[in-house]
Length: 170
Ligand SMILES: *[C@@H]1O[C@H](CO)[C@@H](O)[C@H](O)[C@H]1NC(C)=O
Ligand SMILES: *[C@@H]1O[C@H](CO)[C@@H](O)[C@H](O)[C@H]1NC(C)=O
Ligand SMILES: [Ca+2]
Image (cartoon, rainbow, N blue to C red; front, side, top):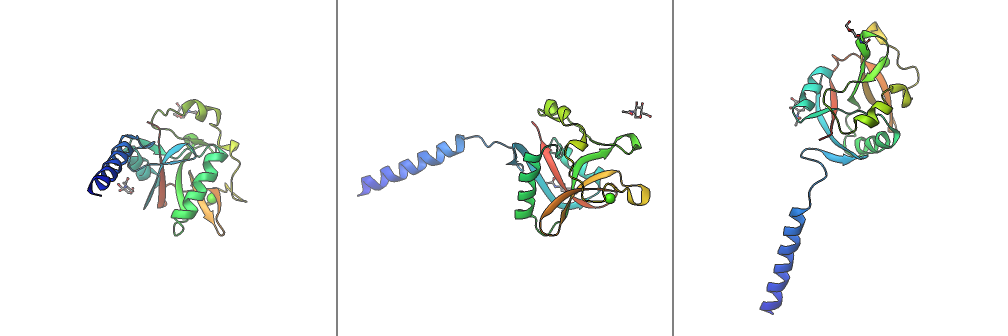
């Protein structure tokens, strides 16, 4: 009996050791979502401050450039951040023009893919009536969780305090 128990404990130990050697797909505090390493920061901040906070992790704000990623991200936000309704993405107006682009501060391993999807129009995921440049200073792109978990884009001033979504690309 003692022997059997020892063997049992030894195999548990082996499972534990083996488990530790399996590399996590994403570094802390990121989680694999839609094939990307994503971290949602529930503290609200301006767009600029959020860029800096992501950069401290070696990350950009999320480049929500394809539907697969967007849908999985929306499900993650719906399941884990129900109380939060607005999240920063890397979308920003290009050179104070009316054209939004994904603003990438760090070279990303998904850069080729991002270049393919560089135009934000590819997503065509604006809430109806958006972008409306309300007040003339809506220069940044948020994901807004409309009632009933309907996630869509809205343009809004970068000075607004929002939760942020960081994307780590290694
Ligand atoms: C979360 O965001 C806040 C505000 O930008 C920042 O001060 C804080 O460092 C961030 N936390 C992490 C873990 O990135
Ligand atoms: C953005 O503005 C800068 C400075 O005015 C200019 O040099 C640059 O060519 C512009 N870039 C684009 C993509 O329009
Ligand atoms: Ca707007």
